Image (tube, rainbow, N blue to C red; front, side, top):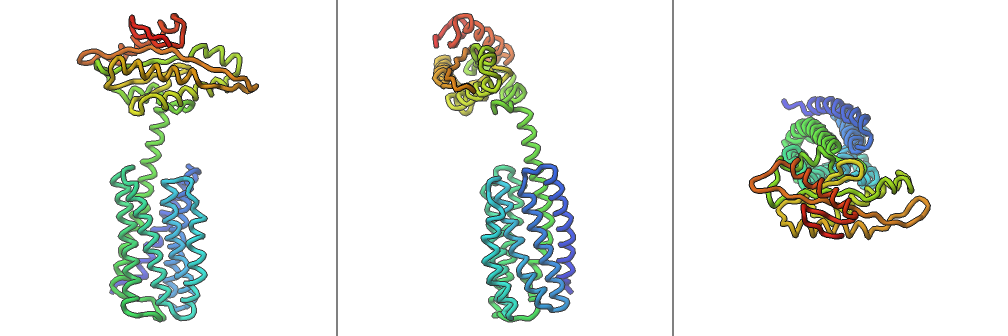
Length: 383
């Protein structure tokens, strides 16, 4: 005979382990609040299982009412935690309260007065809706990690459908007042799916979190924290080892940057660096890798450009940055300029370090020629 309550208790034990693991991982990354929401949601489902087990063994109405109350609250937390996973600003607790409070005010009292079948239909349909919505949220973001996100979407949606079937079977049989836990094929199917989904979703959520953490660490290792651009390592990873004749490197160096630091302080100097990084992002092409190489030196690698196009883009950046008005801590307004050196790859490809060296020589030529300009070999374009 299919022992549904024993299987649910087994799932509850597994859920406790996953929930504690999720909480322990949150302790190492306090910004990932969705882990707390997920753990609390599983906690309510565990409470539902234990209350349901007592109700199945003793028929105690209080246990049945509690089981009826706990299940949708757990599902609400799971749904809200999925939303918060993709949007850290999503208000998890407020969403749970908006869902749970009206439900608690209406459905458990219906169960308590003897219409447990009606209450179970509403309970299962609400749980199904929340789980399916959580699954659809994963579907919308499947590109982040197709296998892991797709698997989670499948588990949430299939589990939600199994809860909906439980409610539909009770309604189809007209069991509005039952007096004991319903036993039918839908309940057995739901139990089996829930056990697999609980453990599978927990493991896959942890795996997805680790993949996201690894990507975050990789991005951190390859980006400059002050400017938000790539660093040297990130730039090297973003471009090929050789550059062709339609690929160019532009090196930028802020003019008189030491003078800015000495006069206005390093905090204002940092603002200048961030301002130039913003100018690069706004006026450079989004597809071209941009990096802060260190200090006040920046680089941009352009692909598929002619000499005229490359110069035009670099000129636009120089002009836009010169027009930016900076403000010192004392309220003084000042502007900054930048010099640039441009160099292209050649033929079938030339090592990128050779192109960088030529761009660097052109940059120093721009400095010697008066700054706030771009130089490219023997060609000069006054800024």
